[in-house]
Image (tube, rainbow, N blue to C red; front, side, top):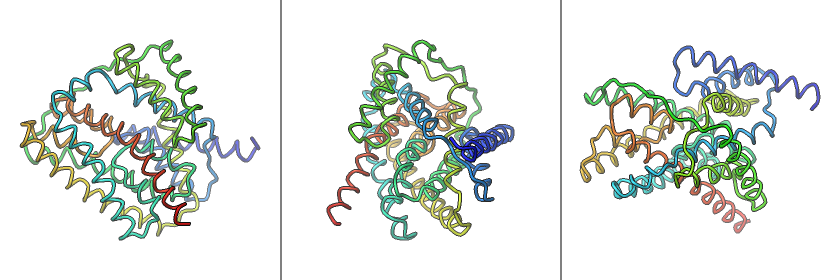
Length: 347
C-alpha cells in the first residue's frame, strides 16, 4: 500500500468514526451505518481521496452474512406453519415491489437496467452494496436511493402508527450473543464457503458464504446467538464508510436526481406494502400495526426494534423480515445473472 493509499484509508477511518459518533449522539436510526456514509460522502464531495481496503471490505461482508444467518432460528419454521398466507404474501410483495420500483427508476429517471434493479431492492442495503461493488452500476445512485428508503421508513412508520393510535411504549431486552469459539468456527466455515462460491462465480460470494455457514446451524438449533455488537458495530462503520466513498466525484445535480428518485419510489412501495398489510390483516386476523411493520421494506434491525417498542408480536415481525432478506439473498443474484445473460444474448 502506497503512502497516498494509506493516507486515504486513515482519512476514511477518521471520518467514518466521526460520522458514527455524531449519528449515535443525536440518536439517528442505524447510526453506525448512516453516520459514516453521510460524513464520508461529504468529505468525498469536498475533493478528498478516500478508500476502504478490499480485504477489509470482504471481511465485513463475511460478518454481515454471519449476522444475517444468525437470525434464521427454529422460530422461523414454527412461524411459517402459523402464518403460511402471510409468508406467501411477503414473497409476492418482494417481487412486485422490486420490479415496480425498477420500472419507475428506469423509465421515469432514465437509470440503466442494472442500476435500477439494484436500487429497487426492497431491503438488504449491505448485500446490495456488495452486489454492486464490482459491477458497472451507478453505485452512488444506488446508495442514495436505498438510504432514502431506509431513512424514510424508519422515520415514517412510528408517526403513522401513532396517528392510528396503534403505538405503545416498550423496551428492548438483552439479546443472546454467540460465544467467541463458536463464532470462530462459523467464521472459518464462512470463509471456506465464500471462497467456494467465488470459484463458482456467485455474486456477493463471501456474504453468501457467511449466510449459509451461519443459517444452517442456527435454524437446526445446533448453535444460537447473534454476532456480538462490539464486532458488528465497527463492521457497519466500515460498510457505511464504503458507501460514502462511492460519492467521490459525483455531481450535486446527480445526487439531487437520485434523492428525488429514492423519495418517489419509497412512497410508492410503502403504499403498496401498506395495502398488502391491510389485506393480510383482514384475512388472518393479525393486528394491522404488526402487519404494517412486518411488510414495511425497512432495515431488519430497525423494524425488529420498532416491533418491540410498539408492543406487537416480535416473532411475527422478525420472521417476516428475515424471510424477506433470505429471499432477496437468492432473488437478487438470480435477477442480476438473468439481466446479464439477456444483455449478452442481445449483444
